[in-house]
Each structure stands twice: as structure tokens, then as C-alpha cells.
Image 1: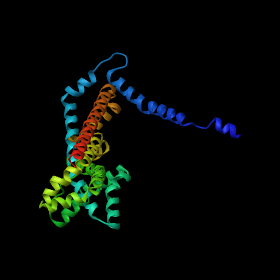
Image 2: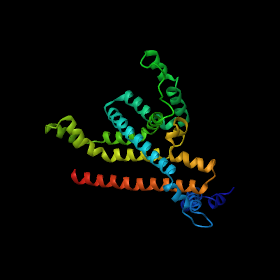
Image 3: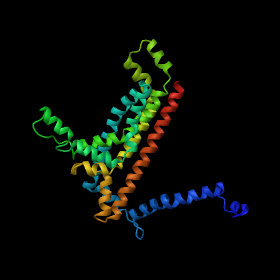
Image 4: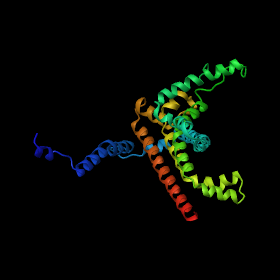
Length: 284
């Protein structure tokens, strides 16, 4: 192959851009258009699926249950994630590296492997119940699996890195002179945390909480494997409508509603974060 032939078939920057736009349209835009079209009907436009999803008590209960579980998971991620990020900021050397690896481990481990491990730990005669029985703390195994406890626990574990990482970045970048100035002015440790540290870290905390909540909304495997009938989430309902009942209109409507909810939450949340950051800049 001659040099002229190689130059003829060389990809230009604009060719790569056009190729990226084509791939984006084929694999992202078209599926969304197809999903939206299926939800309203291609031949005869109808919003029956949306009306059914909102008005039917069963589907409304599943939507509320999804919001409830996602909110619980987000709260526990914040309660565990921020103190852990604070601990990371105090550690040094190898200890910090080990703690950091532990924090990000759920991202790199297959979720199915994590779920199976937690199932072995929490089931009726799992490690926790055997330990409790051996120590004589309980007379019979307690229900730790196939309920709201196991679903919330495992989802919190899997989503914890998305809260720890932004919180750690915010804490590590804090201007220590501001904390020292507050201490010199007589502020207590609690006052420094509430009136100096927390407001400065709030954008990162809100970003982590938003990520955890949005990701929790679409979780499928954890509630399907570790949950009971009372832990049915909207992703499970969508899969059931698609694969078992073949009600594609309702399943598409639920999917569109879930997608719109995520877009609205991200838009509102990120806007509030930006407004808070602007306020901090004016104050500082």
C-alpha cells in the first residue's frame, strides 16, 4: 500500500466526530425514540400506559416503594460515607491507601458476586445468625435476608463509593486556615463542623447524595435477589411487564417516567449545587 493510499483512507478529525454522532444516534437516540413511541403507540397515539401507571394503586405503590428505598439508601450512604471520607483525610501512607481501596472496592467487584456473598452472610443459617446463636444472643435465627434490611444494606454497600469519593475530595481540598481561624475565635469542634466545614463541603455532599439516589432508583438485581414481595421496585416491575406479561406499552411508559424522573432530579439537583457554590464564592 502506497503512502498516497494511506493518506486517502486516513480518518480526519471531522470524520471521527461524524462517526461518533452516528453511533450516538443509533445506539442511544433511536432506542429512546423507539421506547417513547412504544409508550404512546406508533399507529394510534394513546396515553393509556401513563394513566395506568399513575392511577393504578399497585403501580403507584411500587413507585412510592422505589422512592422510599432509594431515599433510605441515600440517607445511610451519607451517614456512613461522610465519616469514612473524614477518616480517609486523617489517615496517612499505606493505611490511607488500604482504606481507599476498601472504599472503592464495590465499584470493581461484580455486583452479582457481592450479592451472593451478602446472601451467604445474611441468610437464615448464614454467618451472622450462626454467630448470634453460638454466642447465645438469640434463641432462633432472625430474619436478616429477603426483606427491606438486606436490600437497604447491600444497596448502601454498593453505592457507598459514589458518596465517599466526592466527600473525600471536598474534605481534602478544604482551606485549613478557615478552620484554624474559627478555632482561634473560640468556636467549638461542633460549631466549626456545622458553620464552616459542612457548608463548604455541601456541594460535594449533595452531588454524592444525588448520584446515590438516582442510581438506587434503577436497581434491579439487589431487590430481585435479596428482597421480598414488599421490596418490589420499579425496575423489577418494568422487567416483569416486558418479559412475562408482554405489556410493552405499560413497560415503556414506566421506563419513560423513570427516565424523566432521573433527568428532572439531576437538573434540579445540579442547579441547586451550582447556586450553592456561587453563594460560597461570594461569601468567601
